[in-house]
Image (cartoon, rainbow, N blue to C red):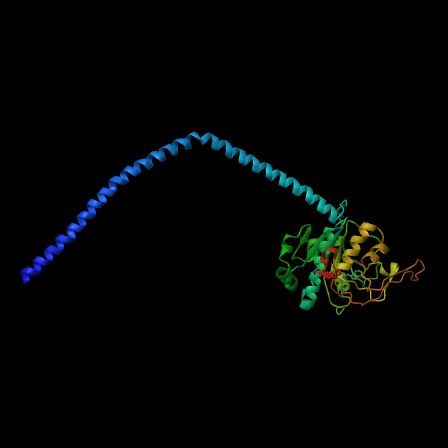
Length: 323
Ligand SMILES: C[S@@+](CC[C@H](N)C(=O)[O-])C[C@H]1O[C@@H](n2cnc3c(N)ncnc32)[C@H](O)[C@@H]1O
């Protein structure tokens, strides 16, 4: 039995081997055919390679042409853009000759800890407005922000990261008295008994960076006296009669200075800049009111009026503010 089984196994092995041999023979036969095809392929490959070599120059030439064409296209496109861009900006804003003024205008941000965050945010918007107006002014001033830090800087970092790229502005963490020579400083404050008549291009005029709804009445006047620097109020009463107090928002003071530099007239500057809600009325030589203006609210610390860029029409034609 044991022998039979051994035999049986041996024959099974023989069958397996036969099968393998056939396979080998079979595959050897295919291999020969394949060799034949391979050589045909090789021939083809060779011919292809020859053709490729022959056409090398032609391809080089075509590449050159394509490159030249792309360069031309790019040039044309650039020219079109430049022409279009110029036409567009000319449509947007007529070119005015800009002559920077040497007058320095400083916004003193040292009152940060006296303000609630909602008022800091208002001050931030007022400063943004000052920056935008100065950038488009005919006689832009040398704009300084001093003592920048605390809540205001935080608001700027959070709400308008782009401020770090602002141009034509000097931003300092130091107090203005460390940045500008004392004798050049004039603090603008409505509480000063001195009335500003003209602007001196050599001076640095300081505006208190404060939105306080006049809770800190007289604070900038006191500080100016403490430091022993010059101070003055804007000549509002000589030119306009207002139905509200003479305390203006930071951006209004800033814009009045810019308008005065452009127009050379306080009266024109006040009327161009002061919001109608201040109820400003022109004053005649003898002190009588000559021009009535519409009366609205009287909050001088309110949000700045939007610039034309900040105001746009919604689809239903209403004016919207982007501040
Ligand atoms: C909203 S006011 C701040 C009022 C604050 N209680 C004070 O004592 O100055 C903002 C700043 O604008 C300037 N300002 C406002 N009205 C002014 C005026 N009539 N004349 C000169 N400066 C004025 C001042 O520099 C003032 O600090």
